[in-house]
Image 1 (cartoon, rainbow, N blue to C red):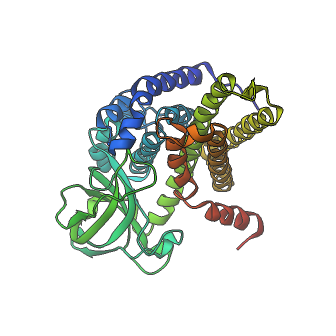
Image 2: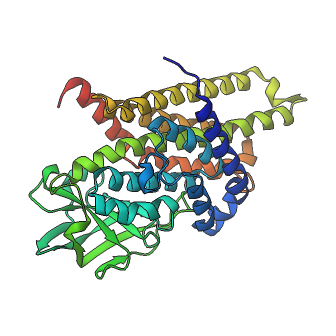
Image 3: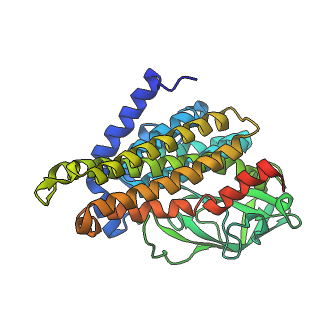
Length: 379
């Protein structure tokens, strides 16, 4: 049990921190205000290996560990939490094709995902199946060497912009064993998109419905065997949950650091805020809770990377703890800024809007509690 980062981990942590400060942080407000999808910055991140962090090297990945990924995402999220979260989703798509796709599929799609010449979207949620993902209705019927897709996916990050859509579809009967995973390419006839959603946060990544109407997809684009899609989706989510957890910690750490600086400068009643014991105690609690969440995430990342039997439970525990903690810390930091924290001239309110959705996506935190309790107590 060694809590120290290796020399290599410290090196790419520093690289991610420098990239975030130079290529994300100065522009995050404009991306948020203008709802800009920052293609150039994303491709610069990809050039550093951040688009295929745990993808194998033979298709352009960095072949790092799940723990390494959480270290990187924590730093990227300090630059722009919304953009870092999109990079997390993109990584999940690239890894799922790399890990479960046939060799031809890997070599066709993954290299361009690793450079972000192509952007990827993960398509599981539907208008009528959110937390109950196994009840999805999007149907893929087999016709010779193609599947014909009909249905719709909701809340898809990158919807309408991405080039690759990793889609969970029903090829068999009801329940999880009837679900398969397909790669659908942009430009496929019958593939269309809804209008961009107007959201509270995450404005640097477009979100839209992804719709299929008699969309023909080659059978060769199937990832894994028929009926394995739900298992593949859930394995991918273990890593996605860790990355989103790390993004929450990074956003919260950014706010905490700024709040400490603010308290050292701001005076009320003749004293600096940093001199009021009640406020000092709040900072102590925020720092303690963030460190506890960080350790939980890193422990879970090691277990997921090692494919331990309890990895899914720990990933759920870490996601629940880190995203709840991250939001509470950011909200507390906004409070300590008083009225200034509520203004868009200051970044705290933007981070608050961005981290709020982390308690909902990649499985709501209520579902995280369900996963943990089922593992401990049985169904």
